[in-house]
Amino acid sequence: MISCRRWLLMLGALPLALAPQAGPSTAAAAATGACRLAWVTNWLTGTVAPLNVDTRTYGTTIKVGGYPWGLAVAPDGTKALVTTAANPPSAPDSNVTPIDLATLTAGPPIPVAPRPLNVAITPDSKRGLVTSQGASDGFVTPIDVASSTAGAPISLPGAFPVAITPDGSKALVGAGNAVVPINLATDTAGSPVSLPALAYDIAVTPDGTTALLALPTVNQVLPMVVATGSLLPPIAIPGGPSSVAVTPDGKTALVGASAALFTIDLATFEVSAPHLLPAGPNGTAAGQIAISSDGQIALVANAASNEIIPVALPAATMGTPISNGAYDPSTNEFQMAFDAGASAAACSPAAVPPPPENPPPTATPAAAATATPAFTG
Image 1 (cartoon, rainbow, N blue to C red):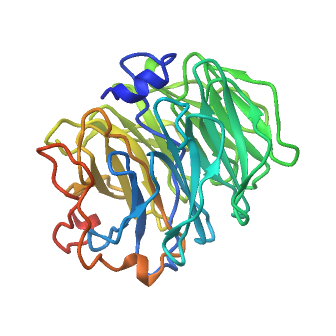
Image 2 (spheres, rainbow, N blue to C red):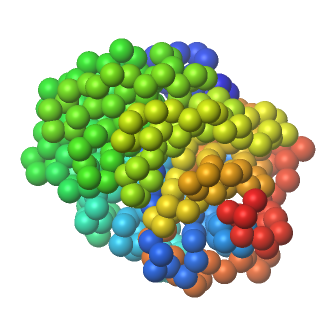
């Protein structure tokens, strides 16, 4: 697993060999958009960029400031929410930046608790939930998406991954060695469900019955019954599974672990042989996974080399990696989210691709590869 020195300083309670690789669970794209579009954060440049996955070209980047970490796109395609954190936490940019996806502009930052990490948006696109993790505390902050205002934070020490059930009634938050349900009608935390280790990612099946928890330190994906919190037998995944996502048809889970992608048949919980990810110039470490709503393509973050790996489904055929721009081994984390209603403006390539800001000497700017659809490899 790749380490991230900046976040190791901020999240000292985490195991030293396991800086966060993944964030909130999969965001899906609707087939009604102008293209198959994913939004991608870049920690080093403090930006978010639209990536037309079909043509492998970036649109114009949007400056959000700070160090962007978590990213979620509203299912109705109107807004995105991006968490940005600063080090030290007393710096002023521990907030959430809303992005208007119609105008492709960032709005005024929304202050939240220090060190915001992951974010999820309810299926009705009305509310966001942001996890923040301090040195000895943690919070989940609700956000009204339309007005871009934060509500009263919910105290939850160690809050990290967050997923919302498809009916929008409940959020599941990983907090230390537990997962905590939050009633979204009352914004109250329920009884924690003890886990054998820290959960790095959570995904919920489309029918809302089962949550899958990625536990890298014990090499497991742990299924949980959402309604009762009952844990099912663990699924062994070698290499430290740190990310998990479920296909829109609910039949398959994708799991990122070290330099490989695994698939899980959700009817039998059988695990595939590892699908090796393409080697990056600075190594390979599977990070977050995003899946298009048609279920035909997944994007896997290679956190070690700041690359996006397109994967054709269901065969899990690897495509040619797409650069995410400037690379710095201490600041290489990023997240992706598909856009449900991608606009023609967002799908268009930038007239002049903007260079990265303050790149390391060997870095190259985010560049479009050949105009070959990513899913063809």
